Image (cartoon, rainbow, N blue to C red; front, side, top):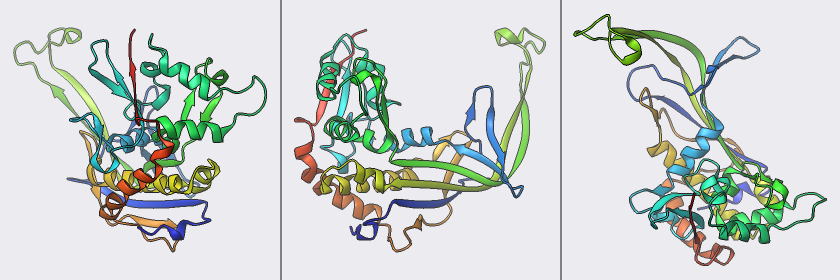
Length: 313
C-alpha cells in the first residue's frame, strides 16, 4: 500500500457516484421541524442533502464492528476502544458504536467512575490557557482511536473543565444534484371498521409520502494536515489513513442501505479529487496492510487495548 503521494498534502478528497439499487427514487435523511434538507445553488441547481456528516460518521464506524463477536472486524483486531458492560457483566455498548464515542453517558455517567478518573488524571490541565490538543490526541489514541478520525467533545466539566474537543479528521456526506420530488401516498385500510377511531389504530388512514430523484454523490474528505498536527508517531499517521480508507471502502461495499426506501449502490468507481497523483489502494490491499500497521502502533495503545467500563445507573 503506497501512500507516498499524500506526503505534504493537506487533504485527501474522494468521491463516488451512487444510484438506487432498484428504481429511481430514494428517501433522504430528515430533520425534526425541518424535513428534507433541500437547497438551491447560485446557478439555480436544485440540491438535497441525502445523508449528513454526523450520520455518515456513525455509519463509517458501524462497518468496523462485528456485533456477533462484540469485537472489531478481523483486519482491525487489536485497536483500542472502550467496552461497556451491564451490571451482570453482559455487553451493553462500546465507544465504536456510541454516537458520541467517548462522550457517551454510558461511559462517563456510570457510578463506575474508574475510567472517568483515568481521563481526569491523563487530561489534567490548568484552569487557564489553551487546550493541549496533542495531549488529547495521545489519550484518544490510547483508549479510542476512532475518536481521532471522527472527533469528540468531552463536555463533562470534571474532565479538563469540559474543554477537550477534537474536530473530525474524516468527513463524509451524500448529496443529490438536479433534484426533483416524487410525491406519492397511500391508505392504511381497515375493512372491518373503515370509519373507526384513527387515534387508536382503527379506520382507513390516508398518508402522503415524499421521495426524490437526482444525481447522487458520496464525498469523503480526510484532513491530513489535522492528522499531522496531532504530532503522533509516523506509524500512527499511516494507520489512521489506512483506517479511514478501510472505512470508506467497507461503507461503499456493505453500508449503502441507508433506509428501507434508500438502498443505494455504486454507479462507477471511487475516484480521487485531490491530490490527483494518488492511487486509491483496493480494499484487499488495505486489509492486508492493516494488521501490520496495528501491530506497529501497539506501544501507543492501552494495555490491554480494550478498556472495560461497567454501567451502573
